[in-house]
Image (cartoon, rainbow, N blue to C red):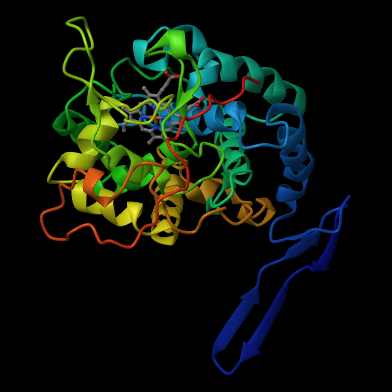
Amino acid sequence: MFTFAVASLALATGSYAVAVAPRATCSDGTVVSNAQCCSFIPIRDALIDDIFEGTCGENAHSTVRIAFHDAIGFSRAGGKGNGADGSMIAFSDTELAFAANAGIDEIVGDLQPFADAHGISYGDVIHFGSSVALSLCPGAPVVQTFVGRKNATIAAPDGTVPDPFNPVTQILARMADAGFSSDEVVALLASHSIAAQDEIEPEIQRSPFDSTPDQFDSQVFLEVMLRGTSFPGDGAHQGEVESPLAGEFRLQSDASFARDSRTACTWQSFALNQALMAQRFGTAMGKLNLLGQNKANLVDCTEIIPKAAPVKNTKAFFPASQKLANIEQACATQAFPNTLSTQAGATTSVARVPAQ
Ligand code: HEM
């Protein structure tokens, strides 16, 4: 039941006519620009309570990841899926068999019955869901959020999701085919600030990519720049460089982006500026959630996305025992400044993200 605060108002001043958008007051008192957003308020709250359990934990992280894997099925060159359309769920039999989607099955298992129970499309549960997930992560921006996606009609083909062992050139080419510049790719990788791995090293599941996986902060950009230690032995992982922090997992692709001349300066700028990182990520994420969609057919419900709490540390810090000299600086045009402090203590050991 909605009551309309102002149904429609047109003011004629001279030769100008100014239309004021209709606003609706939802049953909980929230005023929205489009009455359709009212029905997403209880869905938002149920996502927070039932799927995310009120925290920036494993399920919130996985929902941000599935948003990427779903949307990136889009190709400007054509012929590759329909983008941010929920095909990852609608065609899960096909897409979950792709190697790059390993581990996505768990969140599909949570979001599919949730969408069915609440009568929303799979595209909306994923992409509205990722904005709601981010709102639980201190420091995350409010991402412009649309609803009203129709269900996917075809599966994305294999090969659209980048692999962490792909070279930077290959990942940038794939992302450019979906419409993203190299700076936007680095901005999207701020998502790895709230991330952990399960599938690359299954024996150390839920090992995070930075020391603060419950905060959407710039620690990941700083910590991936730290000089690592070479993986011992001569097996499949020979030549990889690991994080110097016990318990932290470093993706090879993240390490390469931090050191590649095309991306290193943007990477460094985010390590040094949390607000810039959050703002650029928010813009790129809004674009990702709309890949393959026509905005004119959707409804903007950004105003019902809660604002995340402020980040715990507004500036990145060196984990205990790390310092400026440990930075492997690759940006040729700007030296890494001596402005960040080091955490007290002897060493930093990074705890795993609790299972949900
Ligand atoms: C562009 C190159 C990218 C590569 C190669 C990559 C690769 C990976 C890999 C291998 C994992 C670990 C999966 C596992 O073992 O469970 C991961 C996790 C994650 N990725 Fe990415 N990723 C990329 C970009 C992105 C983007 C653009 C986003 C979102 C905007 C994203 C969001 C996440 C999140 C949130 C996780 C953590 C999931 C969890 O903890 O459950 N990634 N990524």
